[in-house]
Amino acid sequence: MLTQIAYSDLNEAESGEKLMSLTEYALTGETEIPGLMEQYVNQAMKDLRKAQEYTLYGLKSIPDFAAEFLELNVQEQLNPIEEHRALIKRFFSLDSDLNSYAQAVEQVKSMINSSSIQPDDISDKLQQLYEVEKTKELQVTSSTHYCNLERHVNASSSSTEHDSNDTDLAVTNETQTYKCPYTGKKMVEPVKNTSCGHSYEKEAILAYIKQRKNRAKCPVSGCINQSFMTPSCLVPDTKLKRAMLQRN
Image 1 (cartoon, rainbow, N blue to C red):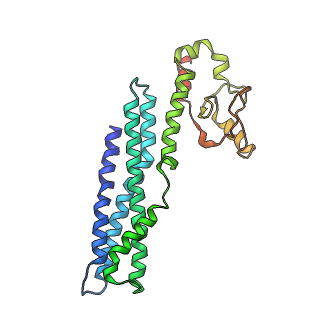
Image 2 (image 1 turned 120 degrees about the vertical axis):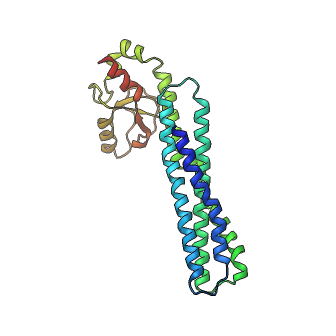
Image 3 (image 1 turned 90 degrees about the horizontal axis):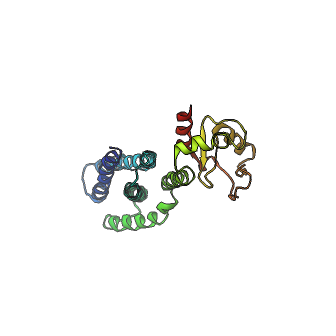
């Protein structure tokens, strides 16, 4: 169901590719009515931006959809996660293309308004500027949304390695597991460090990170992870929270 929603957004976003051609047609079209060409272009751009909104919906929602799948703890998770990776790459590609094209159109509009371009050169100039704008876009694997997806996957893998069985976790290691290693108190809202797999009380560890001005390291004695902690490296430890609730 969740992936169906993503595909629905994708269909809407892909309409933007057709609007790119429509926008070019509006830019290069001839009309004897003053201002009509500009109205056509503005409407086409408005529709293009609307399509781009769906790419943003997809980019923001897919990491959450993936987290839902991972939380279900389904045995065969590889295909759904690979599908989510493919979806986010497609959304990112669309978003980059639409954004680059919109930037190029705005530049060509300025040229037309200032009479600094001949009508016969508009199409070639638009394509040229479009290609230039595309080179400025980030790689998908460097994007915030893709990193969020991988963060959920890594957190799930770490959780599986450290907590192979919720019942064993609750029964055999209650004192050590349920206490925050930073405060020494029983956790209420545990969060997991995706870099090392250790869990802490959310409010306490966020205060610790803030106090150390983002130069805080994992407070667990002997932790081999020496990278500085940031709020973005923390994810809800849903398995630990579930085990705590079951134990209570």
